[in-house]
Image 1 (tube, rainbow, N blue to C red):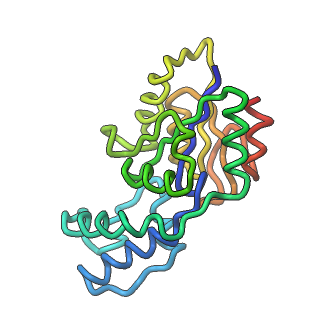
Image 2 (tube, rainbow, N blue to C red; image 1 turned 180 degrees about the vertical axis):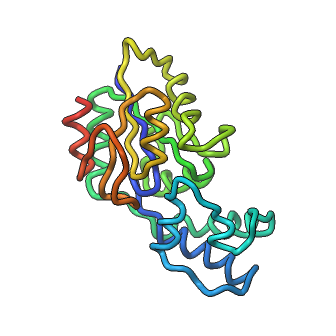
Length: 209
């Protein structure tokens, strides 16, 4: 059995415009702060170590009023502008045609992942879509990946698995789960330590098949 686990934001789809709009909405409504750029917000989200409430809202902790407003706004905003990266749709269908199992492990809440992937017409392709709310610790913890592998009754000595992502947290989660890491250069982060690097989704086929 072969299993490919995908990160979502920055790997399958580009969501940075909508994330930025929702973060800036919270900044404006709750804190009267000026808007941040897409680059600043995406770079902050993909840092290995960071305090996002401090960076986004100048608070030491993620206050419930900020979380509630973000989730209320993003629930609608998240389907306004996302798009699949070029070659993703074809690659997913090719993997399935070759009987490769595919799932998603994202640090976004599961409800948003389901909504966005459904909006883009690919949610039904994945066996498991799991977000950070479904485990005790998000990536770079291996918990999400382990949960997906357990779904498949994965055996390391018999089966093969790859984690495809665009940041160091994805690569570290793969290493800690004992599977191969594939770094996608088209995403939100320019570089991270990895087993394999690909510059286009279709290159994945040469590795997995």
